Amino acid sequence: MSPVLALQMSARDPMFVVMLIIAASFVVIAAAMIVMAVVVSRVVRTVNNLERRAEPLLDRLGVLSEQVQEIAAQGKRVGEQVSLLSDHLTTASAHFSESAALLKEEVREIKQLVGYTTTEARTQVERVGATISRTNEQFSTTAMFIHAKLVSPARELAAVMAGIRRGLEVLVSPAPKELDQTYGEEEMFIG
Image (cartoon, rainbow, N blue to C red; front, side, top):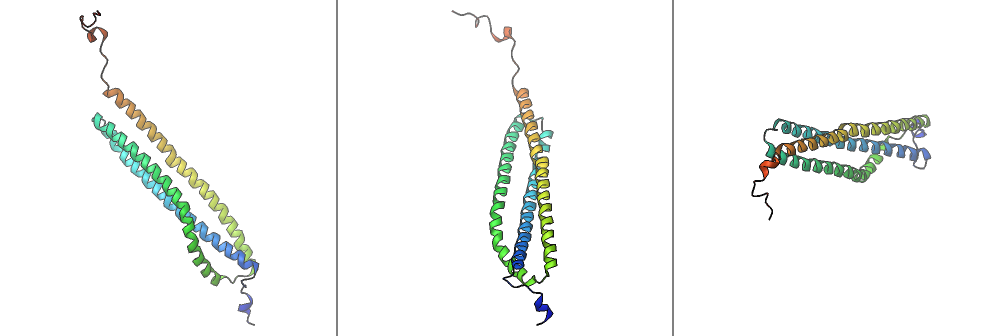
């Protein structure tokens, strides 16, 4: 019996199952990070588009009637983009199930690489624990980033848009007439 064969694990060995679970965990974590990166990049592009669209509105305050129509149209676009963002987040969970098929292929390839000793397997388990902790922290940091960079600015943008709309309504409305200019002498006669 050669020493190389003595270091290989059998499929019945409990550490073999642990190694498969570890490998599957790495693949799931990698897929989750890729999906989160795609979603964050789309959100960043959406915010950049919103900023580019908001700047021309401030420059065109001279044309009051066109601005009211543009503000209403941009409010609709913002609502569509927010619903699009929520659609992307719901499809992210659907992508996890599609990733399961890819995981099966990866597990087959990982079976060929399993040949580590018991000490190395314990080290890998500790690394996976640390990786999961880091992933959890990164997910929390990403959620806080999205809240700080998307949700809060979107609220502020909505408040600014509402203020601009109110200001335009005040500028567009006709000035009230004075009481003695409003009615002639004949109009005040009741009878």
